[in-house]
Structure formats: C-alpha cells, structure tokens
Amino acid sequence: MQPMRIAIIGQGRSGRNIHGSFFQSDLNTFCQVVCIVEEDELRRTRAKEEFACDVVADYTELFGRDDIDLVVNATYSDMHYAITKDLLIHGFHVLSEKPFGRTYHECMDLALTAKQHGRIVAAFHQSLYAPSFLNVKAIIESGKLGQIQQISLKYSGFQRRWDWQTLQARCAGGLYNTGPHPIGQALDLLGWDTDTRVAFSSLKTVLTSGDSDDYAKVILQAPNKPVVDIEVISADAYASDYVFKIYGSKGTLMSTNEHYTMKYIEDFSAYPARPVQRTFLSDEKSMPTYCTETLTFREESGNITGSSFDVGVRDFYQMMYNTIFNGTPLDITPEHAAQAIAIIESAHADNPLPVKYL
Image 1 (tube, helix red, strand yellow):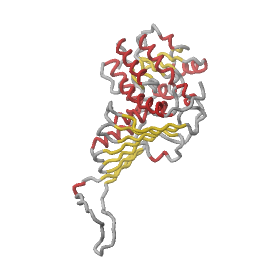
Image 2 (cartoon, rainbow, N blue to C red):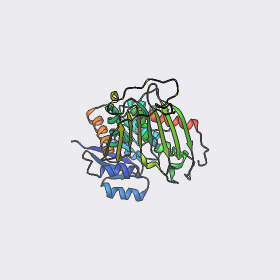
Image 3 (cartoon, rainbow, N blue to C red):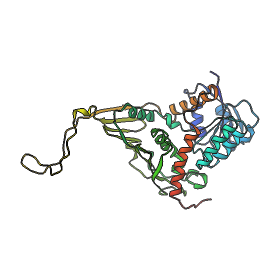
Image 4 (cartoon, rainbow, N blue to C red):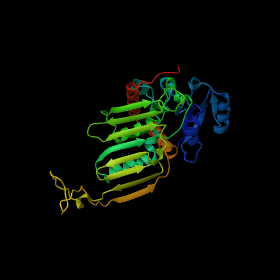
C-alpha cells in the first residue's frame, strides 16, 4: 500500500497526543509523517526526535512541496478556518481539527474553496467511527428497541479548566471544543436531516476560569424524528452512568464508551393492548387500583473494545486514504461538519455570554 504522507501543524494535545500518537502506533500501517509544523522551538526539537521527519516553524514553509498528501491542521481553534483555506488555495488536501470553523458560513466557504481548487477538505469527526457509537447505531437499526423516541448524549464530567480552551476569543468553550462529538453523532442518528433545528439551548459559565461555556444543554428536533438531548457539562459529578441513552417503544439502551446494557420487550404481541376504561379502575371488591401489568424484559449487555482515540482515528484516516488515493467519496463530508457548527452557532446566538478576555 502506498503510504499517505502527512504534515501536522501543531504539537499540542491534538496534534501530538491524538494524531501523532496514532501515527506512531501499531494501528497505523498506511500513514507516514514527513513534516511537523510547530512555532515552539522545544516542541519542534522533540517532534524531530519522535517522528524523524522535517520540522518547520510556520505552515507557509510547506508551500511548494510536492511530497505531502495531506496536511493536518491542529492549530488553535480560532485559526482553523484561515489556515485551512490558505492551504487549500495552495494546493493541499486538508484535514482540520474541530471546530471546522466558527460559523456555518466559514465551513461552507471551506467546502467551496476545496471544490474550486480540486482539493479535499474534511473535519476530524473521528467519534463517528467510535466503536461505542457504531454499536448504538447497530442496535437502533436492529429494531430491538422499537420506534426511537428520544436520544440522549452526555459528554460531561466535573472539572475546572483555565487554558485557552476556555476563551471565547479562541473559538473555545465546551460546545465548540467537545460539542462537535455528540452533535455530530446526534446528526448522524437523525440521518443528517437538514431540517434539524435547535428547540432549546442553554449555555453557562460555571467553573472555568475563562469566559466561555462549561455548561451546555442543547435539544434538537427534526420532523418525524426522535428528540435529541445533548449535554456537555463540566459540573456533573455523576456523569459516568452513560454517554448514550436511547429510549424506544420496546425498551431502553444505556451505553458508556466501554460497556452497554439494554432492556427490551422481545415480542410485544404477547401483551395485547388494553382497552381504555373511561371510569375509575377497581379490583373485584371495588377498591381503587392502578394500571399494573407484568412485562418480561429481555436483558443484554456487553463490553466495547476500542475508542474514538484509536480505532476511530484509524478508521477516519482510512476514509481519508480511500478518498485521496482511490477517489472514494467522503463518508463524513465538510457539509456534515458545517451542519454541526450551525447547531453550535445557533446555541451561542441564543445564549450570548459576556466577553471578558479579548
């Protein structure tokens, strides 16, 4: 297999600890890092040792090179749009970290720029390949839960932050930083319905030292689709019970990223519907009683192997490889990423937070 030659811009937690870790892992059999872009001298020196590749201080030093198949833009969030667009104009295929842009307009401008220059652009929604998410999709599609009524996604915990990811000026905060994961998964479960709208949203600053959100509640609705309840909250000390909770007409699924459990009625025909009784319910002695019946649930549970940080990364890069070298259409398009940003943009517009840091 011809290797896909990679340049990474940035050696922070994403560029080094997610993308870089994958490239150096046993899961990577088809990517080769040929250049690292990093403005910090100590990080450049370390990257040269770790990846045994070229290192440069500025991304513009990539211009004119013909030995790069894909540039990974892992810069600060507020820099994603401008740098990605510049790279596309200069002839590179680009994979941008999330958020793809600050606004829907920026995202769609990147999609248009890519088409105008015959390039490929994508946003790194690797959580759509997470084994836990794919397991949830498979169970929903199996019909075991019946007609899905509500989808809840919880990407929460209890933590305080004080880094750049807490600043509105950096296009940061919980919803821009973490939000693309559950929002992308929610939109995927809704079939990327373009009529999806924000029915309710609330953003707050609770524990962070910065001025952006660390409490985000977003409820999505689409015509004839389940309600979707999304939480990205840094003030939830009991968040570990589930990441996904699916409510169906025949049962319920709860899943973390490591384990799932579900209860459902396997055959509802064994429980005929009761006719409505317009008057009070009572027993044979005319004592008031309540609607009660015994339902036998089937229970299933299992462990999940792999995560969005290993298997998910591998499968996302496999998609990029197939598109760049084989012309296979992207499964996760820039238009998909733009749709996720439109949700985030709408929530911020409805919940403006005071800007304290410029």
